[in-house]
Length: 155
Image (cartoon, rainbow, N blue to C red; front, side, top):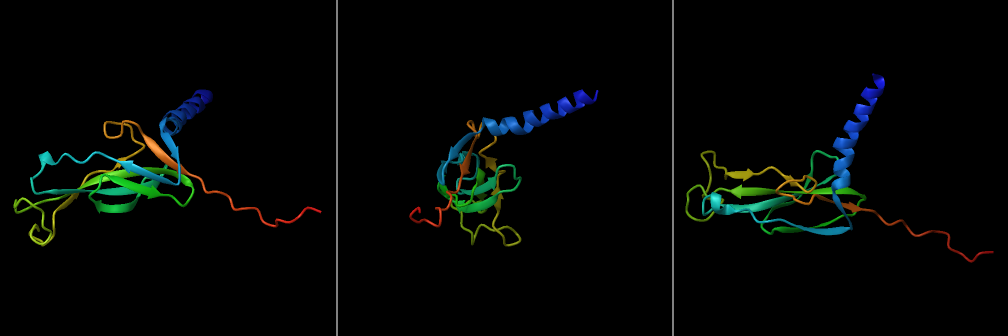
């Protein structure tokens, strides 16, 4: 009975932790440009604005670091200086045109508390397989070693 418990534990670890990491398409580089499709704004108000937040996290981490906030472009170039296996995430940020004027204005489009209405989607992480990321990927970066010291003529 102990053997089957141990075997089932090993299979669980392999199935849920090792297999997804192998399934990723890893790019080895110090700089990578990622791109995504623009949000289909037809569901919102015509004057709403949509921007994007970009996040990076180490593989296995649950929280990412915001590296680009409320950008309009649907591309981002990330440069890596430390070694690691990285996952990239993007969320959509909606700025609501409250007065329905046809364009978002942060000085006019404010709620009863004087704040703009800004909504953020969940983060679409590059390692999650699905309709939003049909080919999961990650970026790995390795730091080059330092040059050898003590260079001299051999005796």
